[in-house]
Image (cartoon, rainbow over all chains, first blue to last red):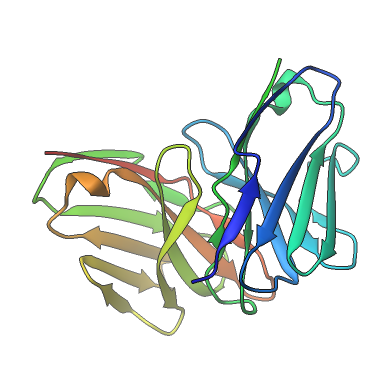
Length: 116
Length: 111
């Protein structure tokens, strides 16, 4: 089945530093990947849609200069949290489809970011 | 917000009982999907029901969809302790590639 690998699973960083999270589709090509953020005991909030070879599409209220998304290949998208602050601490999850719209999403296992 | 609502927010039952979760959404959809999330993990797809379908089964799962009421339900029959997780509905809206998740139901099944 389609597998999405997300790395790292946990990261702790100091305020002001940047953190990069990788999302890879291991056995399929993903022209589109999605980045979600989840607060404890809450739902997933879509942050942005990552498009291979073009700029990401950000949801309303998500700072594109804060959350840099790069989708350089059909199997890799990265999310960089720049100048991290404690309020950026959260669970970040990526996902991708192995077919077009209307099909299920395959999720990575998420990254727990803690900013101290 | 486009986010759907689920109820109940939390549900505790004994093994062997059935669990029913409900989802309401706001937009016109191509399909509605249900996902499961174990604590601190990613989501796993359970079942997809298209807008022209009314009911679908997969193992112990039964999903209904009422597009006139913009609502769906997920029934887990003969629950097991291993079914303990959070369950989310997600809507695949028309003319968009995005999947929007509901608020989720935390299910606890006691042995």
